[in-house]
Image 1 (cartoon, rainbow, N blue to C red):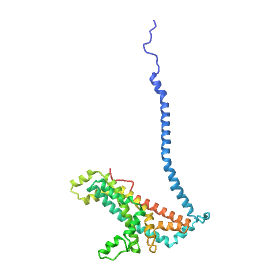
Image 2 (tube, helix red, strand yellow):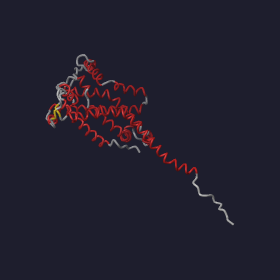
Image 3 (tube, rainbow, N blue to C red):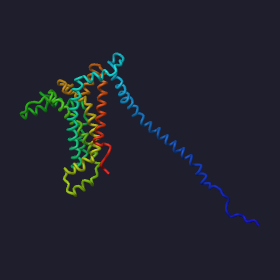
Image 4 (tube, rainbow, N blue to C red):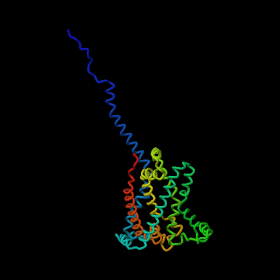
Length: 321
């Protein structure tokens, strides 16, 4: 007598077979979706990338090439090797312009950073008014040319309202933009007035990221406002402050329009900053090769200063846990 086995024949579950067959299709679908996302991302990046190549990368490469040539727009560029750089090293006006630019940067950055930090702390500690923040930002909405012209009229030695007030106080009129001693500090303070609100709002945003519990704990321990500023605010604000300093230093070295509309580099080259000298060499004397060499030198100086600032301020690291 034959006994039939009670166990069913071994077969693959239908569901398992379907799942097994569907896995490769899922992987192919994921790959297709990733390719679609990549194409969409490239589509969105393309306009910015095109603008970067056309307006930044290509002019930079073209300028580096022209710095090794003699070029005046009227004749083809003539390769001269390092002649423009040798000329630059022996050019006293170039070194004078660099010195004037450094003086301007020191005054501008020093006053602007201290004033912006004070405004940011006051905005955080005393008020959260959006209207007040808007008022602080108002000068930044004005262009450098307009700001320069307004202050040129205000500080005019004979007719300016600023000198009228000084004269009414019994003090001799001050030739703010016509005297070698006063000219560059005056231009620096004009730009401080315009940019300090924007810088203060950047620092204010950094202050908002500091946890309020730290200040509360410090108050419980009896810490004063001054002590909290140096022990809590400054260390935790350091990364933001470092980035702001890098941005403002780069912008300060590129000052041009305020000088152009107020003093035009005078008196006696006292405000002939490097950017204005480069502009005069290129579009005033048509020495585009030499102007390009000075531009490359400025690029190298700014790159070195940026790297040094980044390392000294440890901009990439924060003390927040």
